Image (cartoon, rainbow, N blue to C red; front, side, top):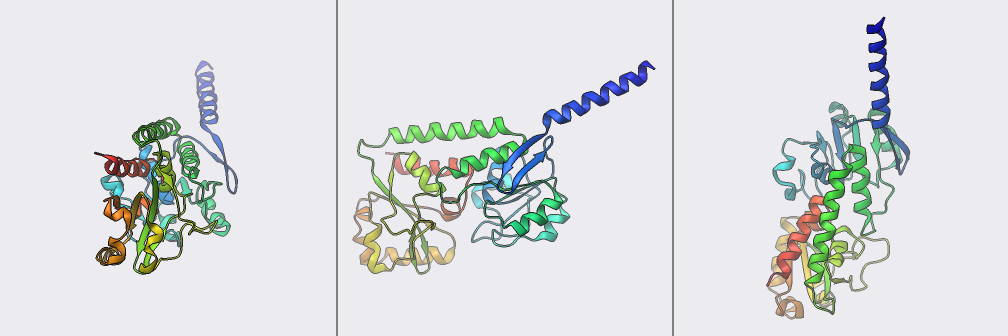
Length: 301
């Protein structure tokens, strides 16, 4: 009889532990309940992959970065062995099913129809954030961390990023220098919104970030500018991103033109080439740290 009571007690304690580990997350498509630490994670959003890796979790599957056929290069060897299960535009559902996930971390732009399919496979977490809010990535990271049961690790990373941004801002002159982020495409540069991940970090690091009045509300970037209109991107600092070889070739050609050479920011050597995958497509704690690395290099004496 005593053995029976012992087994019953262990069962009850186990149930109580599971209940304690269970958590309910508020997501874009309602409440999602998750128990324990998921072991078979699939990420369908670059910010989710970044957050998972920063939390010490290596997903089984992820989507390819924009402009590439694998995950973003800035993640390095931390992302080795992760299967590609689609792109930001299209998920390979068969590939996701084959991985037998116990948690899916998705983009805030995931359509409801896809959510309905994915949530049948595993708890699917979709942030209820806007892609055009500079601080949205932090809310997403905290939500993903809670889903992964790794809140302490991710919160510590976010605190470190905030502290480093403040340190960089302290290096800036009293009048905050104007800065602009542009992504160079084959047809010319597109000015990026001031309400994005990277431009938000630029502002946190002490720049007065501008889009030159060229970005329409609710859009991530302007239309491509012609070489005749390059003066519109002149500023104290210009961060120039490219996504692929075609963009790099177009920017290299533009650099040889008189219109580019006449820019005040060029003459003062304040043009900083940056990785387009990192600066205009990524988000998350690891990406934030890399962006701040680039800013620190720009501000170095």
